Image (tube, rainbow, N blue to C red):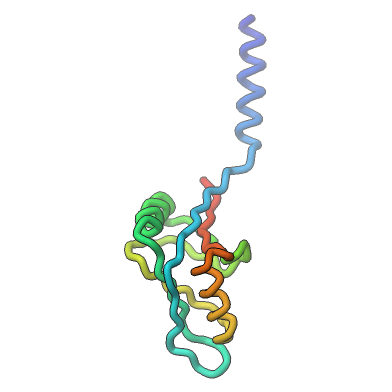
Length: 125
């Protein structure tokens, strides 16, 4: 009986150590967005305003992952990866990418309508 328990313990330990880490993701609700400082066809800064609940969720999420890499996805597409330096406060998020004005406006419209999602994703340590 003791031998069987040792075998079972070794089996589960091996399974747990070999299992990939679970990814945690957070989907944010977007209320509005804006584009500033556009120069030519590309550039500028893209800002999204998220709901109060999303802001609280974002703070909790980023507090757990300080020092870790987080991917930012829009509509399931990886836009940028960044290391969280400190928990993120507030409802306005800057996202800096090279997109045309038309691409930014289309992205903002989809996020506000809910036809696209703004998601943060990380892999647990």
